[in-house]
Amino acid sequence: ALAYNADLRRLYFSDEKRLDGSIFQLKVPQNMSTNVQNVTVSTVVSKQVHGVKGVAFDDRTGILYWSNGPGHSILWIQVGSTDEPQTGQPLLRVEDQIPMGIAIDNCKRYLYWTNCGRTASIERSLLDGSGRQTLTDRDLALPYAVVVDQNTDRIYWVDERPGAEYRIESADLDGKDRRVLIAGSDHQPFALAVSGGQVFWADHIHTSVWRLPLDSPHSTSADQPLRVATYRSSPK
Image (cartoon, rainbow, N blue to C red):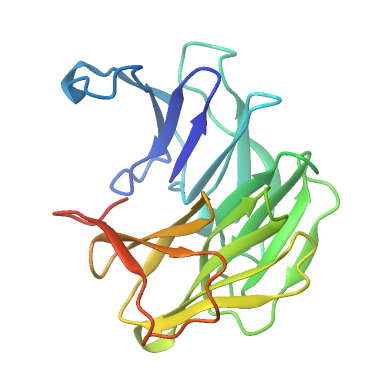
């Protein structure tokens, strides 16, 4: 899980191999050719019972949000309030859900998340946790990631389907006007981003990052997306 603080050039990230719910930060160097061995990584969140599934940063308030999946919670900290690692403060406790991907609508001040529980759904609330709503719970399997595209006022999510099939879908910010961007097989998408009129996703099966234009007509597995990069191990 990743989130970026543009003002401080800080990248916040989790490590799937860490089961203590730690979240780390590094300062992105001005010179991108800087040797990664010279980049300092520090811990901002530690001592959590459950691992981190999704991370989102609100650049207006400096609050870092994250979901913890089987911990049934969304938590937060105020970044920069201390130099010591913090423990999360509960924002929402959702006993009936497994919250995974999360994203912030910076304009309308909503927090969106995907729920991989028994009744999978796309949810949202205000940034203080109030006003919780289920936007859609129809025909979803395992929606892992969600992003907000402020340019088009739409949300996008990835849904892992039975039999190694997948979908990337979108809806307006209220969960209406739902559309399938691509439906295919032999992919296991788990992370998602939207930028420059393209949707990007990371894929466990091919250990690759893929992209597809947002204005593509409804695509199937016959219309393959473009592979952007391939990794020796699965991108986290």
